Length: 81
Image (cartoon, rainbow, N blue to C red; front, top):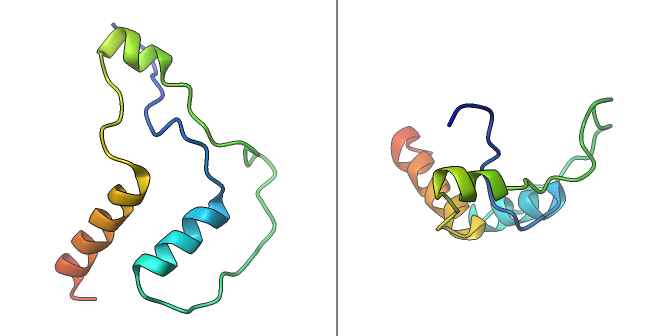
């Protein structure tokens, strides 16, 4: 099989929800800054992973909360932050 395939978590979350989760996981109280969206910024972020499931037998096995926690831990370990 050849071609572009969407991968990701099919559970739709807002950018604000992700920013709040990252801030909470980091133990921060930093304010979240809002800026204007780019002209071509999609309003919905929910990949259709049907093609990945059917053609590649792939689906996510890690919830986004756990994935972000693991990423934050990795970042702290590699940067000393």
